[in-house]
Image 1 (cartoon, helix red, strand yellow):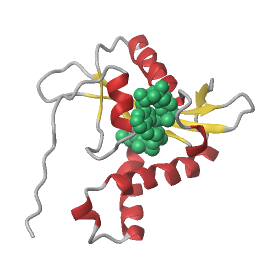
Image 2 (image 1 turned 180 degrees about the horizontal axis):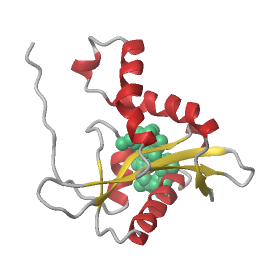
Image 3 (image 1 turned 90 degrees about the horizontal axis):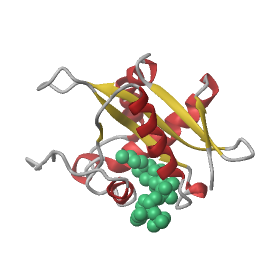
Image 4 (image 1 turned 120 degrees about the vertical axis):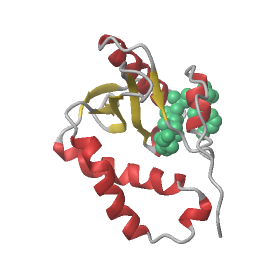
Length: 157
Ligand SMILES: CC(C)(COP(=O)(O)OP(=O)(O)OC[C@H]1O[C@@H](n2cnc3c(N)ncnc32)[C@H](O)[C@@H]1OP(=O)(O)O)[C@@H](O)C(=O)NCCC(=O)NCCS
């Protein structure tokens, strides 16, 4: 399915939060999520992630199908590693609506990100993915991403 990307408007925000909160909740490591309250999580997450959405260096794009129905989104920006003053592009969030999955929309969103970053003169793009995310990981591998670094965790209970 072909999609067209456009800048997000204020009216897109609630749909963005709904999708992103769902993904973020699902991606919390199981041992941590067990003791968490969903409402508290949502309010904390909105506070913590809100600045990324409001940061003028970041842009949220909405993918629409041929009828103008939103089919997904991608939040793009830049970050700077501690070891270099050269920023790299960062995909903060990517989402495809359930009804639109496995039709190449995720691939188009990532291809769009590559072009967007290249136009800014960036030479590398990074993202984070939960180890258990069995849809996003294969997509990223398919799009040429390689594992850079692992975050490891161990329960202390
Ligand atoms: C991850 C996600 C964005 C993929 O979007 P999508 O539009 O379904 O992906 P595409 O159709 O472009 O898939 C391209 C390729 O990625 C791989 N892929 C995508 N979803 C997959 C899945 N569920 N299982 C295995 N491989 C998958 C396949 O190689 C696929 O090619 P194929 O369909 O020809 O086999 C979508 O599943 C999603 O929004 N998930 C919830 C949000 C999320 O987890 N975001 C990532 C946070 S890090």
